Each structure stands twice: as structure tokens, then as C-alpha cells.
Image 1 (cartoon, rainbow, N blue to C red):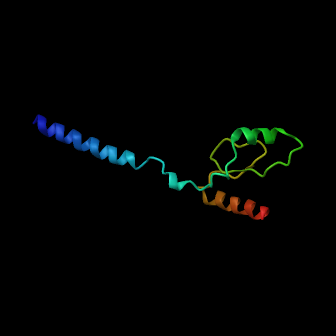
Image 2: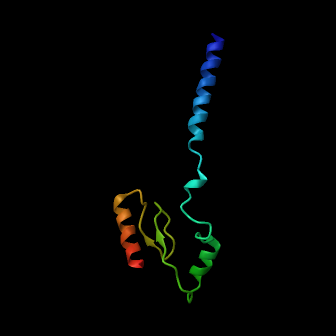
Image 3: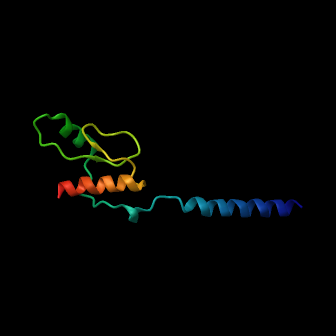
Length: 92
């Protein structure tokens, strides 16, 4: 009886570990090249300089809008994806 419990618990832990390992972030999913993202400190400095040419910022997060950014909203929503397309078309 004790052996069955140990086997059942071992199997359960094995299954849980397999499931949890599938949730770790994958490095090959990164959509940006290393030279594309801007360091937050540099962005904050640029945004605080009133005479500097300001970048166009499109906020696609579900919350926390960056100062002077265009709030698109979370892009898992189809309507927000369309808003993003419209704003990107304006830039091209």
C-alpha cells in the first residue's frame, strides 16, 4: 500500500514538472534584434528633454501608459490590433 502511494506521488510530481517546464520563456521567441530595444533610462532621459526630437511611442500593454504615448491597448484584442495597424500606417 505504501509503495502505491509513493509511485502515485512520484508520477504526479513527474507530470507536474513536465507541465511546468513547458511554461518557461523561450529565448528564440524574442521578436527584437539586440540593437532595437532602448534602455529605459535612455528613454526617460529623452522624454524629459523638451527640445529633443521625441519618438513616437505606441503603448500596446494592458495597463501603464508611457507618458506622451499613443494608447493602443493589449494587442490580443482584434480591435486593438487594427488600431495598431492604423497608427503604424500613419508612420510609413
